[in-house]
Image (cartoon, rainbow, N blue to C red):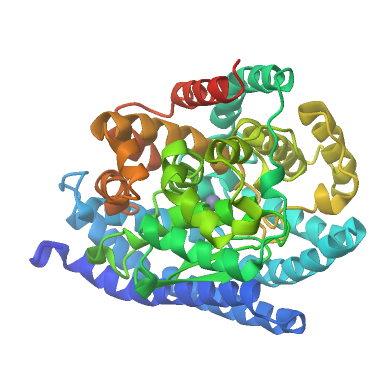
Length: 505
Ligand SMILES: [Zn+2]
């Protein structure tokens, strides 16, 4: 930051908001612990603790002093280059402030308590495949999210304010239009694959010692550039990444004893998120810019690593011999090509996080439509399992045998994150756009991967994405990094080329 009198209001504002940022990180730590270590009986008190922290953060952000400094900072910096750190800082603070101002503190406390209990109940309900147990909690979550949307009237669509929480500036109609444009091509690809010779993925479905899986997960993360002096890898039922600042970025993974793909791709995915968080410049430490641009941009990083890097031949040319050394009994006799095809098997399946690249977006489209219907009120929570199963049948030709493998599979609704799912599919599109640009800039990327070198890739992402933190709106960031707006064409090109070769279409 520059010195000088003109920026003093912004500097004071930043000093003031340090408490808000610290409280947000404490909140993240409580939530990380909740998902990784907390015993079930801790849920109620943890809910109260989260509510208290959230209320304190709310009070800091919404104080008269914050409002006064924000107004003063805005007027002092009115003539500044819109591209400057200072202007970006004020835009991000203003957005957070305006969102928070519209939401009553009482709602925030209720939401925190409700979602903490809902999460705990969801874990139990999923393990027993008992939707009825979760239903009253989800009804409360939906009601609270509808109430939340009402704080942002007027809007074009009641789902817009929820979407905007995760994807600043994105509208429901825009996402629906993007999804409508890619859906026919994705369905056509899946149908063509369905008529081709199937790929056998039996090599992934064997007994794999979780301790050895953990060792390999650590090796993967480290090799891709995860800095373990500034982070940890732990285990949780639903893998996720969270950050308590640039010096402490946590990822989790999940080890399935009879399916290797779960930990491999969860670990690579979360590493992609973590590299983004670890790549935010120290200059933004404890400021509102020390964050990703949006969830779709975050997902573009995780999906780029998981799929475009982590399911590629050059990647496994390097890693597969190492994996075979960890699991000689299971993999010594399995050629690289068999393994490569197995990890890229396309097969409509019930579980989103296990879905292949070609069917993945259909899982998202299903959730988006159901969420929109829940928020509009055209679908009742009690009818959700049936609606889910109907859409699974229509989209993927499958009906879940139970709700654990259907409507109860994802953590998001229990956490109140209605509005989140679309960012996964948008992340896929942005990842493919970035990938085309990266490969144009780094023509020997494949050879680097074959040698186990992932530094140039990380450096490119640092330069074009990570180092900006939350400085740009997602649309601006995508434009700057790729030269175009969100464009589904690279994604469809990538899918058709890759799977055309694997399935000889
Ligand atoms: Zn993710």
